[in-house]
Length: 298
Ligand code: GDP
Image 1 (cartoon, protein in one colour):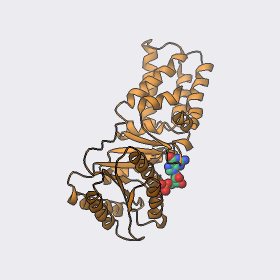
Image 2 (cartoon, rainbow, N blue to C red):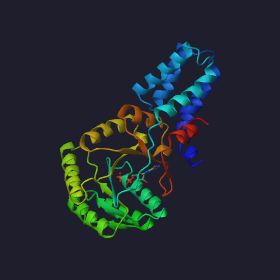
Image 3 (cartoon, rainbow, N blue to C red):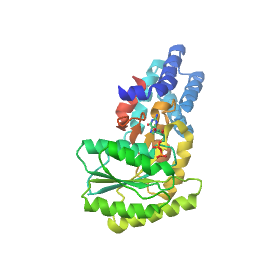
Image 4 (cartoon, protein in one colour):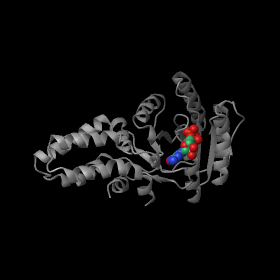
């Protein structure tokens, strides 16, 4: 229900409009497909993915697998669920500590996401340590501290302007010494300077690997769903600088463009692992393709 609520804007823009179109159209003809294409594009499903979906509908109609326009919704539902099928892999907490690096541009919701995840895993009795690796933005460390207090976990933090690598160094030592199950590392997201970003992430990687060669076990790229196609472009830059293992898609509650979930999978080949549907500590979900598609269409 929370998920349906979080997706309400997308549902209005996407599902309601498709339903309206289906009600108004007698046949799956070019006009119908053109309209459907517009709806998909406006939900930020992405150009390539939209083409693929429209093509699939056209073919299915030709082969008489679907006949009336009312068959289109169940068809899309099934097709989208299949597209997302191997998305939504769970985060495995195996290694101790499991090191999770969190990257993304400023304002996308990195700190909030770490707070939510820290609380979630603490509730499941994992010992969590947070590293305030964004030493660039004045409020970032402070915010992480507040989230850490809410979630009852330790926060390793240096003064503003300190070397992020030094924070990571201390955090790795602390997480190992305190026998933490999970270490989340927050980072600064200054995308306007790609060389700088790359250097910083490389340095952080070196420090992590010096303690645990196979870490980071996960690198989450946080993307803001309200930025739609722009999020896809950001992702491409980060994928060149870090080995991203999954996406956290935030602010799905604030957008009618929830179709970007499908674009992330289709255009970037990245699984969406978690979704944010609000500012509160419980306002997020592990991404489950079936539930997502159900919530979108039902
Ligand atoms: P960071 O700079 O990437 O660390 O971003 P923050 O975690 O500071 O978040 C930036 C803003 O986005 C804050 O006002 C958050 O409350 C808000 N935010 C984060 N996640 C969500 C979400 O899932 N939904 C909504 N509505 N707001 C969010």
